[in-house]
Image 1: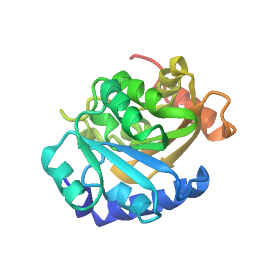
Image 2: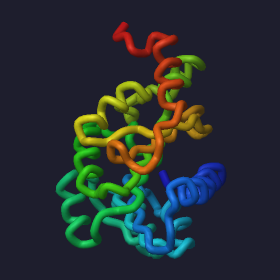
Image 3: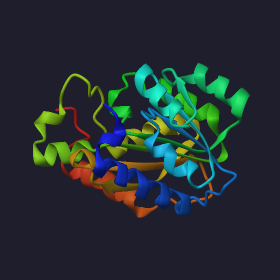
Image 4: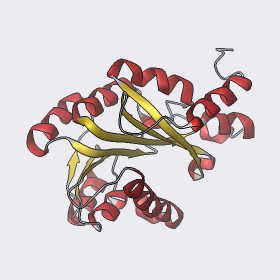
Length: 214
């Protein structure tokens, strides 16, 4: 799978780069890391804005494509050990971003361990993942298959970030994957106020019973 083969997804990532640059006030001095960066499509739009970029992806062939295309990419699984190496060599990131990768990761805490290392007090982490509420409402049974090991809703993600001293400050429902969420995370009591979207979606999940095991 190569991100650049989907024109719709390429345009989504282009629009995302414009959106997040304005939303969190990135500049030409900013450093952006992409977890599960694939062929570097997402990072290419930040590079066009003259930002420093670094991708991390475990697939050898797509990492090679990214590096040949001028997107500096580490061919590895992202975890706290890799994050520590990145921090010592490149420093902490202004934006850490991940798009449709976290549904494929069994050890999600291991990823957030790495994010924690790379986040300063001002850094922002953004993860885009398929939204299980959309799967449930629309009976998207064909999104449930062996490569999707996680199915995400907002309420448990909020709990996931708490022990790390992080908080979700905004969530947006977006189109990819038949329905996804864009989750924006900062250090607790960070520079952005917590938007109503967060509690609104958690309440909606409660209404559909998604907080109940059965």
